[in-house]
Image (cartoon, rainbow, N blue to C red):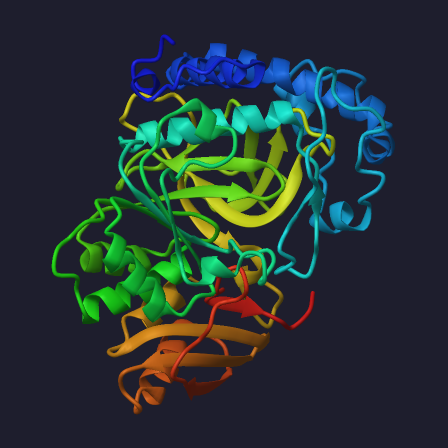
Length: 451
């Protein structure tokens, strides 16, 4: 294999699938520094294939694109296509499935979103899409300088069947952390797996006992671990890098983790529907969009492209062969593009992933505003360790707070008074814990007042 990074780990096993992953990885190593003209030409070619397939073989898009060009020949034509809302995708699972598969592919098991937004969206990847996804995963590991032979701990929602998978609630140690096809491709070090629903003290004991080199975890759970490690540090440091994914990584969560674990934290941006979207270039780097596999747009309320630094709605178009294509799909997230990264990669960069549209504050006049000022101010309240704000109406808020001080109610209300410029009421409840959901995620801010 030609790649200098992966060749040192390659097991040398040759199968059509493994060889395809190797070719994809070699391409990704090269394409990340292509000139923009060449990269965009490559992406437009893949877009033409995806669009043509969807327009002919996916009933949902046959109808949606009935008045659109038969072929996409320019980015201007692409930006003129109608968007697909999450509600549409959730309401039409059958018509969104292609009546034939992309040539030379086979469908894999259907995936479904968690439903945390109130909508369950199905996606059906193919084996060809999965091969590209594995190559993207390897490129992310390369970006972070990860030694595949080192040990890694994974704390995620792993238990599918409590009886069959019950051992994961206690924690499982295996010879290699790689799973699936990756385990046949590259040599990896010991793996330590424990389900995110395991009590935090058990997770902490598990990590201290096995002393992994790397940790993969979602931000909400990481924050709980950070507090535990800060209160009772390990006798000897082992973790040198923490990787997060699955939900928004807030600045204060990153800061607490880096302080408690004394190592950098790097984040990845993905979705169940389209897989890898972007990954941080490094601990202080921007998020490079995985442009070889996805078109990521950021648009304003009128559908116009946002300028760098201007937050907007995220649209994604998968360039991989799915049995359920996603074209200009409104993901329900808010993000903003940034300036070019200094690392030399030509992939576009996101400077910030704000979070879910559900986490926008609703004002009485109907306007929606980003909650970062409120969230940062709440995080700065003395003694506050964790909180969850629920907006019941434009002028009514409920907040649960885990705080070392029982008298923090006035300070919390003062934050709302300083931040919100309209009359409102706030109910503050000091609690001992705010448990995450089944997937280990916890939304800091939720709007539940309806559309």
